[in-house]
Length: 574
Image (cartoon, rainbow, N blue to C red):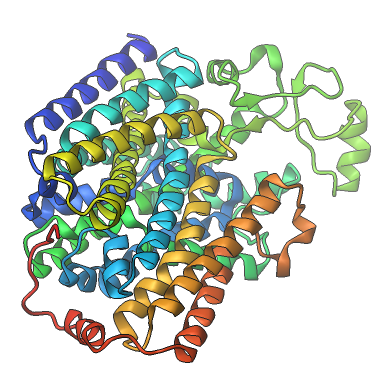
């Protein structure tokens, strides 16, 4: 059977599975809708957390980034993994002890003002919406290539699927759907990696195979380094970015993870604090499977791409090349009109004066790859069976849809619970609140789908912006709210506003306002500016809190109490 038929069969089966699970686990109350009734088993919650956290950026884009950036791509690997550890160990147990099920709830209660709650809601909506746009683009990429539909149609189909099970099931439906999605995405990511590892270095474990030798006895990474240098790129295993930017991007991703609302709420879906800690450990184990495999997938894909298309007549390019060209996500510009795809090292004088001049060179004819296609294209490039390629498609869709659903729930709960129930309409009935939450999801799906159709960048970059915004707005308010009794509402609100505005302004200017890399402050890119925004937030919060009245005694007692690991109850709906 063809790749398209296999894709329809496998993707169709997984979609039917998700919808079936959503119907089985549909929400009947606001407690079910927001925190799945608080009765999810730690292992199941660990799987759901892993699926929620491993978005399209992890599945589709991270290996693509590492493949193109080499050493520099490690910032995404370290930042997201380290951030999850920070969240699981330092923040989640205390937030779970607090007993509320949204971050704006914690900030509103901890900082004893509706102003703080409103700022937190705005931050949550801003961060979650930025993040969900990346997921919608990932859905469109997968659909456009393998299901024979246009990119925009793919985004529309994915939006419809998410809308169905998020609106119907809420957190309860999403949780059990995400368990199924985790099984699909982890199987889909590792099976092709095992096939390619066996093919290239004759080793079944990709993580070990990446450091192995190819059939000619050459070490894979050594060959990849040499290929990169020969073609005018930097060595794959050496840094190419300023160290300060590597540090800031890694820190922004790490601190942003710790402030992501859709991940934090996962720790309210289990019965006890002990279960929250256990589910965090299980999630880390499940996450590590994909994250240790991604660098191997990146190295294998990069090697295969270079060796399969360099100095090849355009009329004789592999079938996968033409297929991806049709999507518009891969392009080739023949600058000298010789009909060949060629690279050359313009730093090598002998090469330039010899081969390059002989070929009538007019500049590097770089094939333009959308970085988000590398993972999906890798099985095709390696000529794996059609069912393996289709499985990868199903996994990419599972990763994007699972995270999109969690984010949409955050958006809906921020509007229905934090804005309506806790502020504008405190007397709203449970049925009315549930209806408002579902309407909010519907509107969010439509807006996110439109933005996903016109994304500002590749998936991981969009997600990196979301993490930077979370780091600069939420992280100081949460960490100081837990560990600093003296932190008051004036300090927290001022810090959140300044941190968010500073970071968003920097990102908007350099991504959409005409700013150029040579204008970066201290060589820090938009993806890393969230670290500086976090420090600005932290300093301003501390200064303002010390110049204004201390919080009420009841609030200070609350801060003391949430650090005591006893007596934690279930999440409550005040």
